[in-house]
Image 1: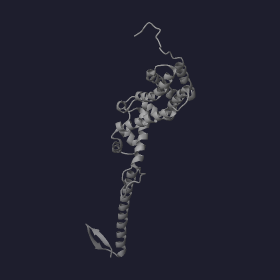
Image 2 (image 1 turned 45 degrees about the vertical axis):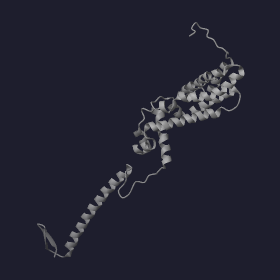
Image 3 (image 1 turned 30 degrees about the vertical axis):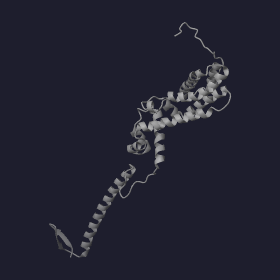
Image 4 (image 1 turned 90 degrees about the horizontal axis):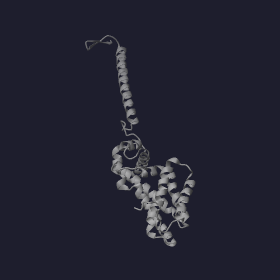
Length: 264
């Protein structure tokens, strides 16, 4: 006999085929329910994986970096952002997002935006100073001027982002070093060379620091203009800088005097 449901009770009405059919229906219903649940779960799992959050049943696979690799990545991203937008307009959120990490990772490595900026500035200052110092090899004084001019222009051409950061003002720069202080460091290197030349030509070597600041400052300010202009070509810019500096030095007066009416 089969079974007929009456108010929740059952009675036999026929053979086992009816029971088998009912059980089949129940099985199909259960399968559909389970399938739907798995589909919804799968959709949720897929969404979690796409957003980079841990997926159900395991964590999302990511390419992991060492601490040193992550630090370099953050420095590269920060350097680009500071060059394009400046210190004030760059945020930790932006740097973290571009690196694909959370803000605490940036704080863990640098303590904050200020710490990251300080490291970037320090690296650029050392890079430029090393390039200029390394370029000043033994040779004719005029050749030394050419070497100094080329060193700065080479840095601007190769490390344009770094140069933009160095010449851009920011609150942090006051504690980590400014472009002016960097130029002063480079002038100190030139000062020693000029001091020897002054002594050999009968000029007062005590004035070498003044002339060194003037020469390096001239090249540096021209570099700030050339970073955007990029014309004339680098070699031509260097030639004109040396032309002005060398012929000016070549006609120095031992005791220069003013020709105008003002004396003070």
